[in-house]
Image (cartoon, rainbow, N blue to C red; front, side, top):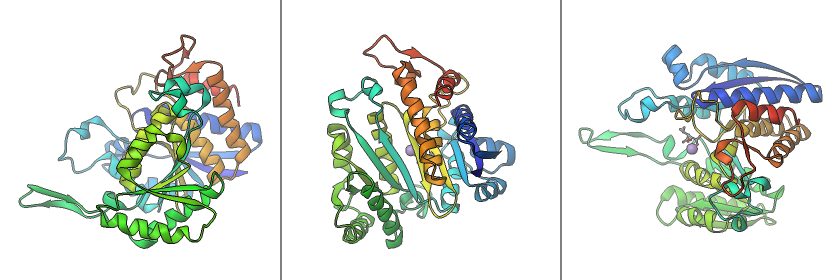
Length: 356
Ligand code: IPM
Ligand code: MN
């Protein structure tokens, strides 16, 4: 198979982990006889520094012209404490999602057995947890009108959803449930929000097309609690942009660490694959970031954009073998055993590479 992959490392540890993600893709190409060609592009803070624009047109064009994008992270601390900054790295990410029509963000939460002791949640509660989140990615309070009034003393962000936006993400979630355990939990705040009432109405209607799938509607505050209390009750979870952002950071603890969670952003065009973690400037340049989320993102890329399931499984099995051998990055070190061998980013990447 011949494919063009665009590497967009972005900021902070995005650079370090995406380098590893690319190496494993190369290894897969070599082992399975594919030809992957690569190009690279800028986004986020590094793009602002180079061009003044967090998503240069050139990057967007390269994305459109490629078969898939392996993405790192965006963000820089200098903007975080400067609420008046007009140009911000995150604008690049949001614009990319909108421009490429990446309306469905899949975030699989699955604990590797070896990491049962690495989570702050009790092993007996976690065992068997396997959740697939569908976070809507191009609507909601993220993209509605925002502004200031009353001489700047009042601020607003409008949350908005249209029927078709809920329909298409709901269908994706129901379709996925059919390939899993046939359960969908739709999360909203329909007791308060009008957008959520539309959301629930549409999901109820779509559910009629899937009589074989069990549907549950939950309020987001209850879901936040249930994820920790009883994570194994969930199969597919579908929710709006902001709720999905928050709940998946929470749910990353079910997988042991943010450093283990990959995501796929898909729509009608090129798919973008990225860790859910951010640029983590506190550890940038230290060589300690966990590259496994980038490797798992590469696995999603192979499976979803290229339909290469065996290749994708080869990556997951290699990670499994590395964890079984006792290797850890420091974010997934198990406090309950002394037998972990703590590795940095590159060394962890090499352990995975040697097992593909
Ligand atoms: C994510 C991130 C982004 C989001 C930020 C960086 C804008 O947290 O991808 O989850 O909120 O969507
Ligand atoms: Mn987030």
